[in-house]
Image 1 (cartoon, rainbow, N blue to C red):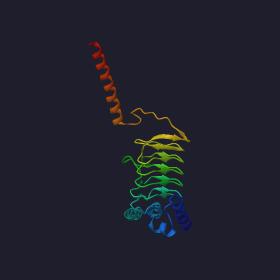
Image 2: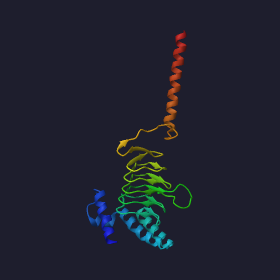
Image 3: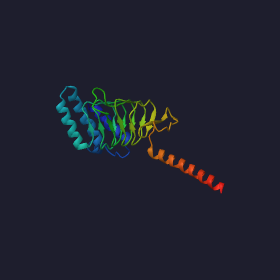
Image 4: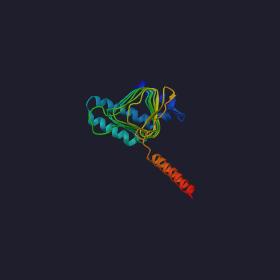
Length: 213
């Protein structure tokens, strides 16, 4: 347990250039407190002491602003930067060396039973405000852009952005994006294109009528 705690502190120094001392990190980093509280809650959860596990998780939520369900499985060297508003669901599985930022939700899409929350494989980064929803898998070494909403599996070594999330980089190569509206809804752009087409048609009609005079 002590070795794991030292490892958690070391990750903070690796990931956050604002960290200045071990005392500061141990006493003031809410993400670290949330992870340590979760380990205790998860231990009770595995022993089927669900009420006690939930009490611990809710106390942690009150003090840190980070809600991690005690049933979630979290790997080593997990780093939550800032963390306010982070929500991690019951059946989430998070691998080693993952990083998430404030406002991230790893949630479900309904009231289904069983595995209903995301799986993050090793070395995944989920940026500020992103929502990863449902029983999907974010592949190893992948990144989810800030504010994205991801509803489908993401392959390894990929970067996904947008609402809904689309893959823009895979294995270091930029992915050509299909901009059909059924894949990437954008009502405002679609409306502008329609208006532009109508204006063009009107100009042609005016020119045709003018030429007849």
